Length: 99
Image (cartoon, rainbow, N blue to C red; front, side, top):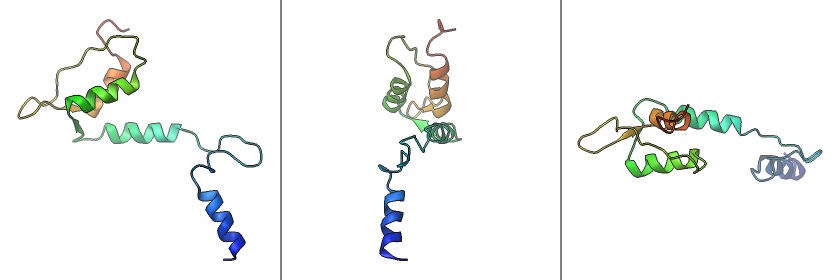
């Protein structure tokens, strides 16, 4: 590789610079893939979250306007743990009053 090709590769692989195309300034990466990957990893089997981590993730997914009702933990003993699937459930229906 020439120095010019190496410099171009570094420029193209840079995360900060790779988000928009240099030609038109359009977005080159869509956040959809990241959301799908995150949802997939969160809902895999044997993903358990402590109460503070579960509440933190639920807060990230809400707008803070609607009250959220915590579901009962999936595992009670020796420590209360919630699943990643319950986080997605909270996003879809944060309380019993939600439709």
